[in-house]
Length: 401
Image (cartoon, rainbow, N blue to C red; front, side, top):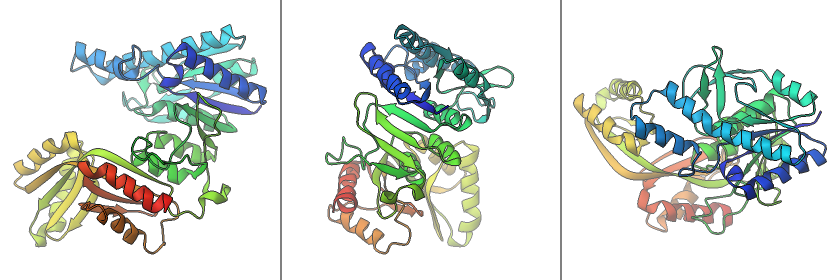
């Protein structure tokens, strides 16, 4: 049995016309000799009736302090509606489909409601349906505790569901269908000449996702990488081949390039704490423990004699500043920043990458507020007003020139 997992995002199931495209993709998979397992997201995006963000807003407008346990129950509804309707549409086309919740599909989680972590996946109920010739239509984003409580998997949870099921079923491939034709070298809304990537490595695309690209969730990539299952990002609405995500050694095209893409994260603030140089080491541990205790995630961390700098989400900046100042620290905040990153499996060990980056930004007089790098990524902090120019400049330097 050649199992393929096909995941369809919210825009792919939002209208009768979109559902017709989904049905065509499923039929193509069957005609090609695959046995499909279909995973669906809630229909549409925020503002649409049954989109997850719409359901969350409805719940919080009714009760601002609604508990995560109850919130998960209403968030569960979007995917259930989507899966029921999709299964019905397939049945009307002569495909013997059956709707399954995430719990019925065997996704078992802990009880961290609204952001649950998966403990195990038992695909036995899915394989039983497949053996009967049925096409399971599984609610993405969902899990269930060992006690039978509904849980959801957090942002990007439907992508995660697809990879989890692909790994558990030893699928030949996981296809992630969306409204774009693949992963691009930059956001096409900013860079008009951005190109679709034919192939990328698991590591590269996970970094692109962590650094702001929204085509696939990094958890889904990491799960697929563990079982070496190819992922393909493609459009529901065209026959473009999409972007194939594989192990780096499986595609020569991804071995030699320095940069794969340029991405960005807006709405970031920078915190700078001035310290006695002799006490920086001890005080920095107190500062970061304070942030952890306040559930504030930090990034772009620089610790130097005399000061500590880090970034965090803009909406957490005032809370962090007030807490640090209440403890007696000389802390300052710089609002309206953005993180711009170059991602590429070939960055490590290549001389001159940082020189080229700084040259590209200096041509447009863009100040660099902070930097951080890894084996596959170089990131810079810039003012939000400079982010589009920075993305264009780095894309031109590394992906075009």
